[in-house]
Image (cartoon, rainbow, N blue to C red; front, side, top):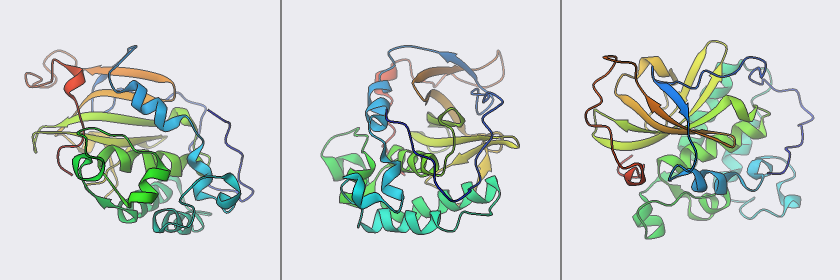
Length: 233
């Protein structure tokens, strides 16, 4: 993936010195290769889409620079300078949640599990949960947040009984959950019904388990290829 050019205006960035604790939602993260969704995640990272949310978007050659989706996110980025990390994450979460409409992949793409790129989101103006997470990932990357501080998590929502996807931003004060179902910014330990299944940080993939007796995991999927986070908002 191409390197992301630094922005001229100083912006809040999450510190990159300490390694992120990837065992989110009180899980244990185990490095794993060839996970079913890994290729979709890497495809979403193959091109530097952070340029879509910068002032030079038109010169980048990316489609969708003049879309409502891109314009709304750029407008929020212009207000980031001077904010704390938490305020920045809260602004990004709320802005992306309002920048496109939630629709399931079947309605948008005619398939059950499609991971859209930001240019595709701009064209359609709609997406499902992992699309919101990918848009937040690229928005934060455009703000200079280190790749290793961002974690896309595929999980099971035990309350709604469906698969879901969120973006986690790791900070010194906790792992914040950027979620399309809520504009309220919470840390991972505040959401008991989320059980992570697999996650992705940069080039790395992880599966998640739990310490003995820490959670009831009888309903966790045995077939990871069946985890399609597009069944409900």
